[in-house]
Structures are given as structure tokens and as C-alpha cells.
Image 1: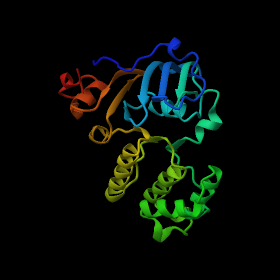
Image 2: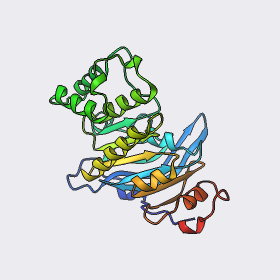
Image 3: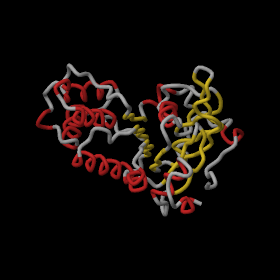
Length: 263
């Protein structure tokens, strides 16, 4: 097992309740834990993500990946510990922080009775986007839906709906993109499109947290890998030099060769 890096102590962030223009971390978690129905889902997570990082969160089903993304999205609060996003207390400054976050979740969070264009313009107005029409048209072109922009989303295939959800999450140019299995349902051209968008976000200095079961994809897209096992971080390190077999072995010991590559 590799050494967990980026750990912090609670005293380090006890007084960091306001935004610092020079704040270096997009995410800072200290002893982050979550109980649901008295069952431990996440326990004692300590990690930091610098602004501009792209981190893959990997683990077996039930490891706590989606719950971690919900915490980062401020959709639920930790049972214990502290979470900061861009130097702000995520448990207290949710309204402000949500304007800086884009979420691609398991549900597309779009209205099926509205067209793709209407959905994007609606969410753009909710987030106070300046030129909503231009931004929505730009994203519809980017996700290959310009020719279906005025059709009801309810007539779309699963992959097309996912593309609308991706565009919706990016309407307000979020500083932090949280993506929970965003490639699900996408065909090969669309998957390549999304990979290109993730790379563009990284080049723009935005922070991406990607949950995926595709080890090769995680290593190809991200510069950081966080491995969850039964709600705990068991490895947290740079993606460079890790093999997919080694990563799988860390997720489920004994299932793959090459675990030594993760040391």
C-alpha cells in the first residue's frame, strides 16, 4: 500500500473561513466522515487537491465514491470533520460555493419536457450567466447536439441526455467539476469529446474530480489517484507511473498483478 499524501491536521484549517485570493487548495478535507443510518460510509478522510488538479476517485462498489462527491458538491454534510472548498467552509457557505461547482451525477438533472436549448438557458439564468444564448449555443455545438437543440430532451437516447447533462454542468464555467461516472452511456465519439473537455478544463486551471471504474481512463486523464476501500483512503498519489493492474490490485487486493507498481 502506498503512503497517503496530502494529509492535514484540523488545526491547520481552524480559522480559514474566508476566501483568500492566493488560496492554493480547491479542496481540503480533514478527518472527513459520513454516517448514514448509523452506518459508516466514509471514515477519517484527509486530503487536499490543489487548484487545477484532476483527481480520479476509484474503488469497488460501495467504497464511498458517490458519497464523497455529494459532500464535495455540498449536497450533504459530513457527520464529522471539516471540508473546505476554495478556502471556504463547505458546511456553511453552500450558496456561494455552489456557483463555483459543476456536477455530473447519476441523474442527468434536466427537464425532459424542455428542449436541450431551453434546459441550458434555464440553468444559465439560474446561475446568472451573462450571455445565456451564446453560452448555450457554444456548449450544444461542443457536445454535438446543435442539430437537435430544439427537440424535447425526452425524445433523446440515454447518451444524448448525458451530453445535455454535461453541457448543463458546464454552463456557468465552474471552477470545480465533479463527475460521477460521466462516460456512462456515451458512444466512442462522445467519450472522446468528453475527454477533450476534461483536458481543456485542466488547461484552463480548473479542478476536476472524476469517479470512474475505468482504470486506464483514470490514469490517462488525471494527474492524481485516490483509492477508496470501505470508506477509507488506502492510497493517494500521483497518477504518473501507475499501471492499471497495480491500481486494480490496490482497489481489491489479490485480484490483479503488479501491485508492487503502486508502492
